[in-house]
Image (tube, rainbow, N blue to C red):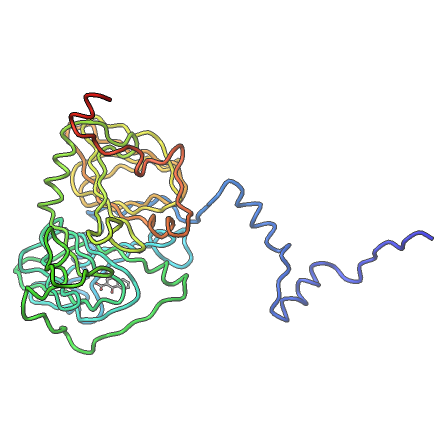
Length: 368
Ligand code: 1HN
């Protein structure tokens, strides 16, 4: 006796509907998506640029429209039109914030890790982080790690402006979003500077104390960063993709500035034409100085001072220094540390991170 052919009692589509009604989905419903993702990761994020002249005009308008900053920050966030959840990339939200003289952006905290790269700074512009005053001078980097209390103060007579970079879309996708306003404008400031935790992560520390680490208030003064950047630009091989690129480090771990975000500063020296590469990390760039262009997939972006652009996940891209004979300096933030923790960080055609060994002592180098 031959086996009876399997005659379906209902169509697969109506079976799928039955399953949906009881909150179940057959794995086959992922087939189409998985097929589309061959060769991925593929992101819906688009290569995008926000030009400073346009953003500046809107920031000025925001100063009129939104008279006082109060709890809400006068922040204009850069939204990638390819992404449904918002965000500049899949994991990162970047934007620019203006604080008028005399204003305070009220104290609050959240699980979002954030950082500020100062555009128009002053010794009297500062953010208080967990009771510690972090001065915001031009091109300084200031961290507000996850769950740290922070409020911004402008006691100068200039309009304070900075780039905000936060891991908002990541926190949203992890379901970790939360918010805690302090309920007062300002948090208490530590009375004595010698009690600052951030004074324990420099080149010396109190021997009688336990080591500190983790989410710390931290400022990276531009003066120090620039000194090292200038130094490494003096010669020697750099990255064929990024030229002279330096990572901001957490001095307590030697790793990235924040658990989810890596900050870098790079200088494309005059005449630099970068090779093409791609990374699983997404990266937001801020142009500190100079001009140049970045080709991202089929999109060519010509950038100048204070422009912001985003290189999405796994898209081939290449940087070029502008033709004017001036170097270009870029500050960038990526989600690389997060991907590294999940063992998902990859680069093609090769990994440039930690590729070379540090210089040998001159005596050993002579023998090598
Ligand atoms: C935030 O808390 C700040 O603290 C700036 O200055 C921008 C964008 C989205 C969500 C929270 C700030 C922000 C933000």
